[in-house]
Amino acid sequence: MKITKSLIVTMALLCVGANATETIYITGSTAFRAGALNAIKNLLGGVAPTAQSNATFTSANGCNWIGVTYNGHTINVKTSFYGSTGGIQTVSESVAWPFLIDSATSAQAQGETFVPGSTSMTYFHDIQVPNIAMGDSYQSTTPFTTTTLNDITVGIVPFQFVASYGAPTGQSMNNHLFNAIFSGGSCTLTQMTGNSADLAKSLFALGRDADSGTRTITLCETGYGASTAVAQYKPVVSGTSIMSHAFYPSNTINGIFYDVGNTGYPSGGTVAGLVRNESLTHLNGYYVTYLGKSDANTALNGSGGAGNAVPLAWNGVNYYTGGGVFNDAAITSGQYTFWSYEHVLYPNQVVGSQAEVFAPALGAAIKGTSAGTGTIGTAGISLYSMAVVRSGDGTYVTY
Image 1 (tube, rainbow, N blue to C red):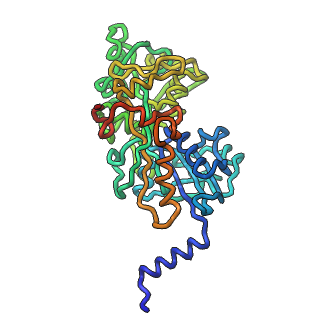
Image 2 (image 1 turned 180 degrees about the vertical axis):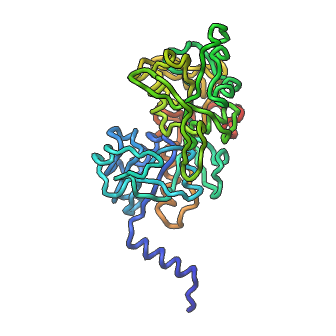
Image 3 (image 1 turned 120 degrees about the vertical axis):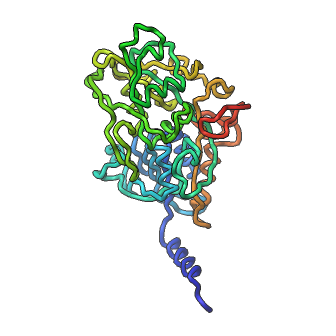
């Protein structure tokens, strides 16, 4: 019998499968991190991770489940959540990404924070191409389309515009104001308030790097353009005051260079903390930024800094109502449009692998079968609650 090349490959795969434990690597958006982690834990029979990078499980970017049982097989599952758009890039373009090593313990993982681009990692150095990405946007919105990914829509991600501590209350963002601030880095406060007395004061752009799905969705929602360059600042903080700032330094992320200003912070939590600081004394102005619901709550109702940041309406419609409360009904009814779908994205997996089964199961577990049956969590909204739909990121919301 002639042994074909395809048969040799199949036999090799069977040999590897017989002697190695399959590992499933998951990356992407932090917006649905809690929902994804709870869904993974549920799929694995409620088993806690062997290592997690935060004392609070649902806030951990890096988690390992080593030697667990799924679908009658022993597998490993690893997560490393650091950005929606970057996650889509790594899966579609086969870009290797850092995960926790197999032997890491929670004590070790919690003592180390992975920073994209860092080479001094002790425990985040299992460098692998992920199998699955959580994404705040459709793949087609990003420039990363080399491999067309399967897409399961699992929930709704709300977003909120925020101004820094001390800014005038009762104000609203719109697409023209966003363009004025983020195309050049600043505009006069009068353009927001309409008050001529504010002419000498400024609004400054603050935001995320290009890995962020929050940034991608914001640029779509405002009509600015998902890949259009922005000009964002990096503040210098002393105590609870911002003393100075400069445009965010240039950076290379996953092999792509971003010029000065056209990058930003890898973490929404960092941005949320920054806008709680006082900026008027030294800069004669305030920052404007965009945050996911959870990070917005930290900025608007958290602790630290000089005090709470200030919520901004979007096109005259308020989402945050005060005291840590967001009006989800404004989204589900179609009034407030600053939201996107959350996606579980994955390539065609190896036939017969556990990844082939796990990826759609993860999407189904997060989504659920009706409102309240999935693992959406407080940072998202169930698809089953929505009275409206949209066909793409930043497109019209319709019934």
